[in-house]
Length: 228
Image (cartoon, rainbow, N blue to C red; front, side, top):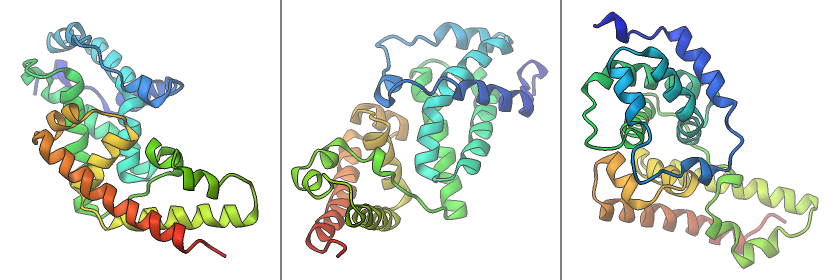
């Protein structure tokens, strides 16, 4: 391997810490992607052996990828380890990046595939935070009415709802979990998800439909049988 493209693991770890300092923007603002690839110059510099250029990419994409990987793995330690592996793999492979897709799509593809492989190999649990639930559920009239006031019963209901949602997610395949994470939590459009997963938009929509139906069934059951 070209020594010019051998970024030390320690350096990646330090850069991840720097990148996480940028996690102050809203989730959807952080996921905004311009029409043109803003990373083209940094990619070219990295391919030419400028490690500092890749440092900038690591710092830029750490907040986005951290949220993606964490919501798929539900474990901070695993997320940190995976991020180091993801950026290390990207650094080694960047010489072969030809710009047919944006760097954004390319790095997310690496992150999703590596996380899916990790989940399938280790069988990690997946949890969906109430704070990250799709707005369509959070804004549901019945849900708002059921959780409008603070009380021990409300707290018990929220805890039970969290448990039921997690159970529903556990019944989904890793591929369905990935789509739910990217669409509902990361706020990615169908078209971008299809590029990252290299499947059709129709496949993305069908996976989301299946996952949403399962989650909605659990939520409906919770509404009918709340904690008493």
